[in-house]
Length: 132
Image (cartoon, rainbow, N blue to C red; front, side, top):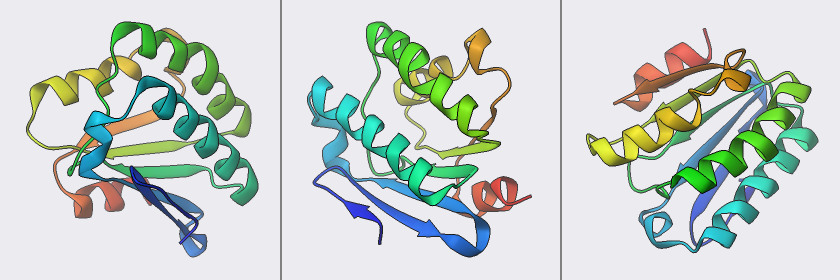
């Protein structure tokens, strides 16, 4: 295990050059500043491991990104993903449309177009795609 907090668990799968993030149910209630800090920490973990792809399992819970957080994400986080050469991002999500829309809108901006991002309802499908 690479990192664990009240809100997530991150495993580095070195054989696949992949970071696997599992958001816990508590993530839905995390304060905005905690969410930002977690994403900044995640960027550092990507740098340290030199992973070029990641899988985000948000099935149990995920922070709903309001528009101002989405804008922060696109200004602060996405350029770092691009600079590190992130190639694939897979999301596993529940059938909760609000969470799905929040995630899709975050990765639907023009500056994020070079990031291959897909959304799945099962971990198996997401792993097959992200490792493909």
